[in-house]
Amino acid sequence: MTVELIGTLLERAVRRLRASSAGEGPAATPELDAELLLVDVLGITRARLRSHPEDVTDEAHSRRYFELIERRATGEPLAYVIGRKDFWSLHLSVTPAVLVPRPETELLVERALALRPEMSGRAVDLGTGSGAIALALASERPEWEITATDVSEEALAVARRNAESLALRRVEFLRGSWFETLAGRSFDLIVSNPPYIAATEPAMRDPALLHEPRGALTPGADAMASLRAIIQSAPDYLEHNGWLLLEHGATQAAEVARELVARGLRHVRSHRDLAGHERMTEARRD
Image 1 (cartoon, rainbow, N blue to C red):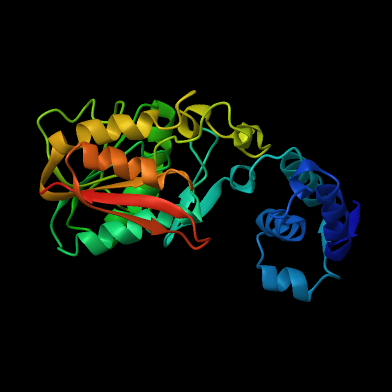
Image 2: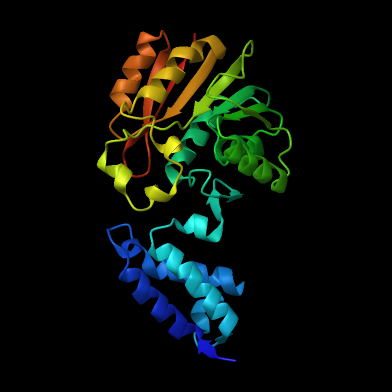
């Protein structure tokens, strides 16, 4: 059986990733990607990987490793290749049926918890995808009644599996577009990370985004379409003093704020993510 040194495997993998689309741009991390994929295949820690480059792997492990490296080299997001992504304090399973949870979306969770410190409450996550936002809230506020909706049954299947694996069984999952399945109900918090990239924007040609569900990224030609639809309906589903929290594009804060004010919501505030971008906006129904 052919064996190969861990250090040699990593060198080969890094060279392959650097030469691919996954190695292009300032955000590329070929060394990190190579390490994380090998850790996943071998079932060891990164510390072990780095401290024992002289360890050997067998042919089966090497073959599996380079199958994953080739997937990453095509631009497939690392989270899809590995099948999981950390968000908040949670380990989430992800598939190409859902967006890869982004660190900036944690800002939405932070603000929701800050605005509703009470141990009781009703919250809904519109367009839940992997369930990241809803499950993060459920993990921090186990007594809340939390509902999560999505138009995609495949996405809801992923979210339900995540809820089950995290033993967060109090979250209710409903299939439908935005408020479609929520007639007659009201909430203390409405949160959403809807699609907000125009279909014609250059960002939609990013190799990584080509692997993610298009409908979760773009509402079509009008980047504001989903945000506007949620804002228009939200007051009908908010309790008095209830909050609407929306993630949006880095240049959309002013337009989102105008829409919120026009719909009669108050206390409109935008918040910046760690990169300094105005990434989410909140507003209250008085």
